[in-house]
Length: 336
Image (cartoon, rainbow, N blue to C red; front, side, top):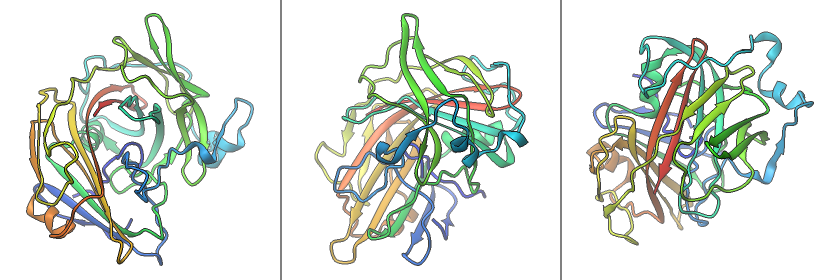
C-alpha cells in the first residue's frame, strides 16, 4: 500500500505506520531529524503549525527572472507545452488507466476567515501514476486519517507529497486566472516561498461567495496549459456534531448534511499542544461526504485516550478534474 499524505489546505515526516481499513498513518518527528512536511490546517493563532503559504517570505517571480523557476525545475531538460489541450469536461476521468507524471492542484477556498487566498501548485512526479490513483489521493475511496506528532520547538517544514513521492515543483506560466463571464475574479501569481519553492497565490483575499460559472485558465509552461476548467459550486455545510465551541476528542462523532457528489469530501483538522512536554499532536482526515464519521480504533490509539484538541476545523471540498495527454489538473472549491 502506498504511503499517503493528506493534502491539508495546500501542503502536508518520517517513520510512517500505515493500517488498512479506515487508514491511519502515525508520523513522529523529533528534533534530531529534519522535518519535511507541513500541515496548513486553518488553525487558530495558538497552533504551532507552519503555514507554507505564508507571504512573509514570498517573492514574486517576474517574467524576466528565470533563476527562481530554475531553482525548482530546469526547463532546459523538459518539454514545454505550447498549446492548451483540455479533454475532460464532465468531471470524470476520460481514461482512469492513463499514466501521468505532471499533476496540478488549484484551491479556490473562500471560507470564513480573514486570510483566504486561492493557491496553486504544479508538480512533476518521479514515477508516473494512473489517473485513478492520483484521483484517489485527493478523493480517497474510503475514510482516511493521518496523525502527526512533533515537538513544538521543531516546527514542520514545507514539503508536499503525493503518496510517498516528493514531486518537483514546476512552472505553469507567469500567472493563472479564475474568470467569470463578466471578467477576472482572481489572479494567482507565480511566487517563490522560502522553504517550499514555486507556488501560485492570489495577492488579495477572495470574497466568501464564489461566483457561479467560475472557470480556471492555466497558460502552461513546463506544466501543460488548460483552458476554461469549470469550478463546481459547493453545497452549504451544516454540521450538527460536535456542537459549536465543543472541543474535538478521540471519541467525537461528526454529523453533517451529506453531499452525494462523488468528488465531494469532508475534511477534519484538529490539534493539541501539551504544555508539559511541548509535543504537538495533529490529525487530518479526508472522509466520504456521507454525513457521519467517528475515529476508528487505530486512529483513537494514535491520538491517545486523553486527546482533547486546542483547535479544530471542518470543511467540505468539491473537486473538478481535467486531463490532457500531458497532465492532470484538480481544482478544489471548499466551504466551512
